[in-house]
Amino acid sequence: MLKIRHLSKIFLRGSVNENLALRNINLTVAHADFVTIIGSNGAGKTTLLNLISGVYPPEEGRIEINGMDVTNLPEHKRANFIGRVFQSPLQGTASSLTLEENLAIAVLRGKKRGLRLAVTRKKREEFRERLRALGLGLENRLQERVGLLSGGQRQALTIFMAVFTKPELLLLDEHTASLDPKTARRIISLTKKIVAESRLATLMVTHNMEQALELGNRTIVMEEGEIIFDVSGEDKKKMTVKDLLENFSQIKKRELVEDKMLLV
Amino acid sequence: MLAGFILHSVEEGLLFGILALGVYISFRVLNFPDLSVDGSYPLGAAIAGIMIVQGINPFLTLPVAVLAGALAGLLTGILHTKLKINPLLAGILTMICLYSINLRIMDRPNISLSPYLGHKTIISIIKGLNLPLKSIYLIPLVFFLVVLVLKLLLDLFLHTQLGLAIRATGDNEEMARAEGVNTDTAKLVGLSLSNGLVALAGALFAQYQGFADIGMGIGMIIAGLASVITGEALIRGRTISLITMEVVVGAIAYRLAIAAALKWGYNFGFKPTDLKLLTGLLVIIILAFPILRTKIKKRATKLQKNIIRG
Image (cartoon, rainbow over all chains, first blue to last red; front, side):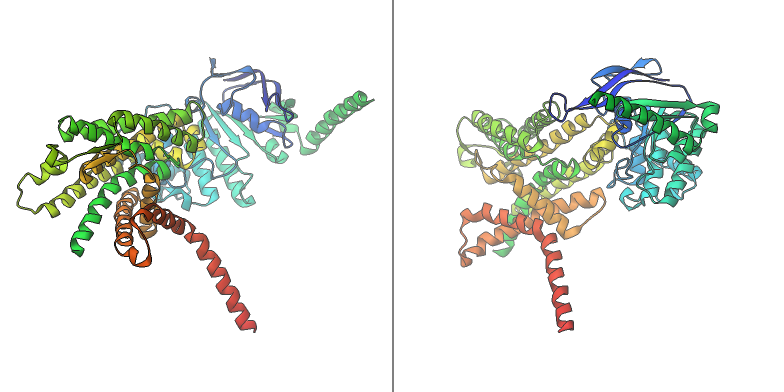
């Protein structure tokens, strides 16, 4: 499904602030895989998602989706296969547009946008039907501007828009990090439901280790631009936060020792 | 006398309304401060002027002006999207290039359009129709209908799939790209449309005032912006059709205010040459208003507290 080979990203190349954000990442994600990604700040989690979605090009490496090389495909064309949800609810929707207008933009992902009316009566009915199944009451607010919705509602709408056209891959970038705990839990259960229903391959970045272990069938840990740990299936189910931390600190310790050796 | 003064300002305001709709598309819909307007407005005027002088049907000047304006907008758009030049600079570059191009088109800095010279303009044709309505009412009526049709077409366009893509690009570019909108194309289409409207306004205004002048574009972007923000301050609409209406109303209000300032301003020492200064001051006041209001409010509550304490 998603195949990443030797992917590297360098920011501000050639300057004093040169930053090797990703080093030689190799990752294969199968259909219906739900992968959670954790790691400390600056580990390269968001950079990885941005490279997959085409926000910027990699310095080296190759990205394939369903056997198709998308490395040089522009961001808006990759949107055909990729649904995205961002950290801030403000990022994934357009505030000055109404709810149905936001949806109308999402349904045309990968299609030509012409001079036909964007929100037709038929489309409005379809939106209403499908939003009703979501059970958040949004079906009654189709003609309200999205700026009037709460952060949780906007994030729910973004997830809904991301999967509306049934993409191949869903990218969630700490999509509950800026919500209050209660709303975050609601969005997580909505995420679970939607991913389970649509069975699409999902990558979810999170800061929360518990969440990372609870959700999905595979967890990877990133540190300084590399994948340092990858657990899935039965091993993951048995894993606790304590195990994860131990693993993490062992890897860290080893690195520290190596650094010390360099200094000596 | 006063009726004539008001009618005259309304006529000018309606033509400025077309310009303001163009400025609304770039500044508000696309969130792109496009300064090419100062060049595309006289571009439309230059095209109308030279075509009419050569005896071409004045109605034909309008589509040609729109097309030329759209190309100017396209240039600004390409400078920004493909060559990654900052929006303000891209607009200024187009504007400065257009100065020479407009001189080339006109072949002189000023073209006079006058029935006495045998020139047929849209205005002279309308006046010659011998309709039962007096021409001082007929001209504003025709202008009103033209602006109304343009406004309704723009409303419709902004609700199409393409129009929505342009609005999303201006509102949240990150979201637009994530939802598969080619934001470069959206900007190019929006800027072309914007400058096409601006050039149309220029072509009509040249025929209305009876001349095209190389300097008539100076400060037009501010005039357009003044119309847009005056309208926003007056009406504060949320739907597209209300907003485009307020833009046109703002243009008329702006022209009325400027005309009044020029007519009666000399009592306070203003001269006709102070027009651009007045426009600039008007825009500054309207832009600064929200900040000044909160500051005044703060000071007022502070004073109140002191009084209570004292």
